[in-house]
Length: 187
Image 1 (tube, one colour):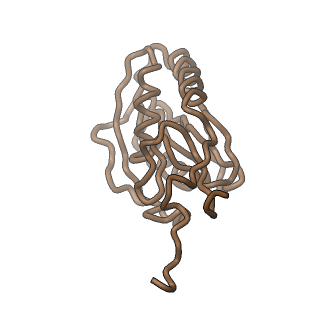
Image 2 (tube, one colour):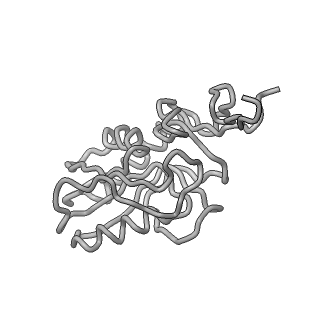
């Protein structure tokens, strides 16, 4: 196609590792130990935001050594784009009540803060004991609203990332590491 725009995110050749599988594994263990200590004796509910958070959640729960429950929410704010629309829509809600429980959101990435601000406010109306956040990644340069991140994996630069659950147009979630994507083909 003569005037077709080239998709710079189409090829795995353009992926550049940012955080290794080993770094993620080590940091996840540290977060799990801290969460276990902080919530010992509590009624803990981990809530993953789908789809991106599922890989981090799966590895994180195996490092937490206290009883807990799991639930999931699905939201839409990106679609197939690389930029958030700024509009958050809950497309799948929790399956049970949160009243009196300690809710810990497990999120893949916090950038603008809009999605997590919306979700945390929404859950607080349901009368949990408290609501906190565990995020694998944080992009402070993209922040539009302050979101308290109680447990943080890594702070990263303002680059689009994929892997370890994060995607571009539903691709690259299965990478065991976090990668950035080049705009131009490699050398």
